[in-house]
Each structure stands twice: as structure tokens, then as C-alpha cells.
Image 1 (cartoon, rainbow, N blue to C red):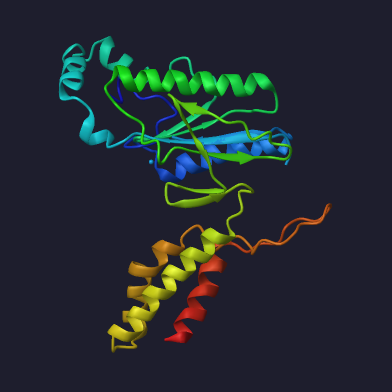
Image 2: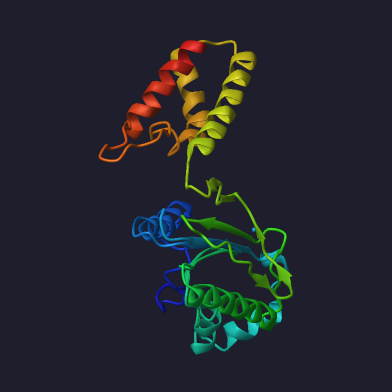
Length: 264
């Protein structure tokens, strides 16, 4: 499949050299670039500026419901012939908005500061729904959300079939909490809270206070929850003409580690 370039650039799931991190970085780098230019967007999840809407889409039990006949027939016609390539890539076909996928989780990000942007995203949603119907799949409509972004966002309503997609002030995207302002303070607070709970369990359940034992437990049980969320400085209003102050990722981890280990 890799040799035949069957998966498009928008797919980051189960793809060599890509991961949850590359999905998030690539997608939100594009979102923030639009915001910096003053564009309005909607982020639409399918599981300041000009406005954007981010739309999150989630296929319902995708790995359980995909019909084996469709899968096998397409693979058989592919030795790998054109049908498999077409089947894997045709979800992206004709989509006008920025599209990003990780396995069955799909995000759309259009610029919607003009009426044409709203019409384009509704057209894309209709096209994605038709693709799902043709392949006997369903979107989990309870998990499909719209996250409005940007100043002056008109907060359009979008349909997936006959049902309206709910708007949300924040959504969890591949484990990372994203809000309307792309503010990470709550994500960091939740990660630190979870790490502190693990720390309390270590303190209660492990009698040894050996540095080697504690550091091993910290690295194995706590650090994964903190990776990538503690290094930015706490959010505070950034005045015009001043750069936000932050610390390096390593310094952030070291400060937290010193504070928590002193607790033990």
C-alpha cells in the first residue's frame, strides 16, 4: 500500500512516519495560520481574526461495521489494481476544505468569513455522507461537532444528512482538549491533575523512597501524561509589542519533577 501511494497526505493513522502528534501539529498549524491572517474558520470534527469552523467527524464503529465483501472485492480487484487505490483515496475526492484524518476520525477546516465558505463546507459534508452511504458506513452523529474559531465568526449551522451538527465550546481531539481560543491551559491542568493522582497512588502504595525506584515509576507512569503539555508558560494576556514568555520543554519537566519528587 505504501509503495503504491494508496493513502493520501491527509491520513495520519497507521501510516509510517506519521502519528497523533503529526496530525495535530499539521492541522492546527494551518488553523493558526488562517487566524494570523485574520480569517474566520469553523473546525468541524467528524469520534482572531477572520473566522474558522473546525468540524470533527467520527465514523460509528468503523472497524466493526465495514463490510468484508466490499473490502475483499476491492482488494481482489487490486492485485493491487486501481480499485483499491480509488477506494482508499476517494473519501478525499472533491473535498474543497482542509481535511485531516487519523484512522476513522476526520476533521474539516474551512474559511467561512464569506458565504461561499459556508456553502463549500456544507457541500463537503454532503459529499462525505454520500461516501459513507456508498460504503455502508455511518457517522456517529453524537460525536460530530463544530468548533467555531475567530473574531466575527457568524456561527453557521451545518447538517450531516437530515440532522444538525451541534456546536461545542471545546472538543477532545486525539486526546488533546481544544477550545475556541486554542488555549491549552485546561489541557495542562487536566494532565497535571492526572499525574498528581498517580503520584498519590505511588506515595500510598510504594514503601521505598529510593531515588532510583521513584524516578523509574515517575518516568513510566507520570511523564507520559505530562509530555508536551507543561512546557508552554501559563496563559496570560499578551500585550501588543511584547512576546509571550515561556520555558523550554525540558525545563518545564525538570521543574515539575523537582516539585513532585520533593512531595515524596
